[in-house]
Image (cartoon, rainbow, N blue to C red; front, side, top):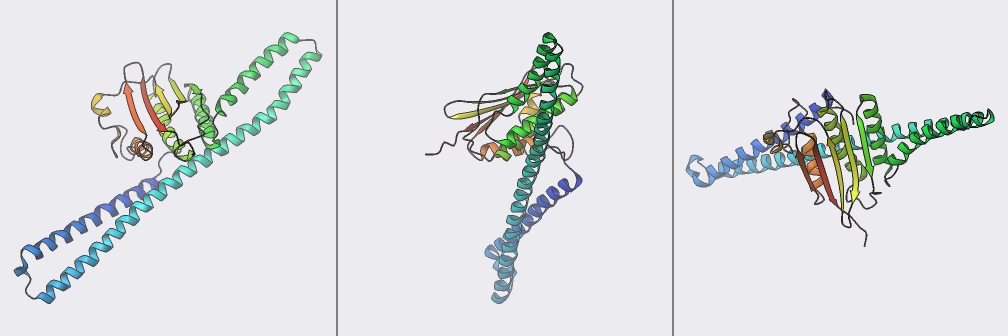
Length: 288
């Protein structure tokens, strides 16, 4: 998942500022309206009162429309950001699959040559190494959603490059998700990125990611063996803007929480000295 840029932060600041300024404008108009109602003698003529009330109504309506548009713009921006992440991950997965297809022919040639040279032990050893690589791809391609598979592939590669042990358990196809796949990617991508951040400087870093299901729910878990999160941080960790990582970095978990709760799901976190675990539970959307 890509990091925030200055343009990203500017758009978010502008949307929040528009909401804040227009809300203040509506409250000011409401205050003046109350004065007119309870202290009518402050404004002399009835015509002046009517004119002032009309101005307040027009101003408040305009402010409300501005707030609605700012919220809509912010949602559209988040939506576009999710799609961009999904496209990047799909591009990566497609590239990796093309490499696998190309390498497969090379592997066959090597195995054939080893057998021709009467080196069966070397051929078996080579096949076992190739099988290990193919098994990794098999784990990644277990869900029914290419964008989620692509996210897993990208994060697996990130872990290999960072020297982090990435343990994956996918025991469900996620066929009946109540959310669009790109929203799952946004939620899980945030959690996995946070796990990477928590493991900076950690000895023997490990991230565990699992996708499981019951008869009625999906359960998605991201855990790491980084430092324990303090209780006072846990109490506010899903609050918009709260972050221990500095300015512009406090929206991730709030966004995840909003995505999950929008479909009646639940999100929780548990942290101990040995492991920190984030859990998402979503109801299945089974067609009738």
